[in-house]
Image 1 (cartoon, one colour):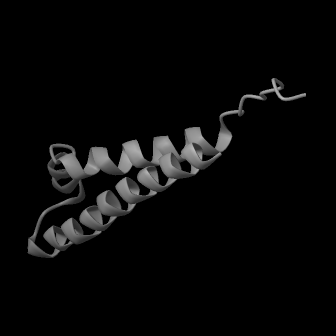
Image 2 (tube, one colour):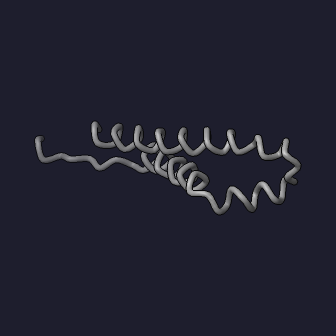
Length: 73
């Protein structure tokens, strides 16, 4: 249980750092970039992948069924 919570916090940290970076990059739209150019730009950045990996880790830790250990019964 503690290990899953630790992995959940790692995923949360990755998602937050990636999401904040993506929001900061939205300022590029005010310089005249189009939405397509923005999407092409962020697809080359590591922060986009940090966000996606963080969301994936969070989803896996929440919805993956945990093992039942009946060795102590």
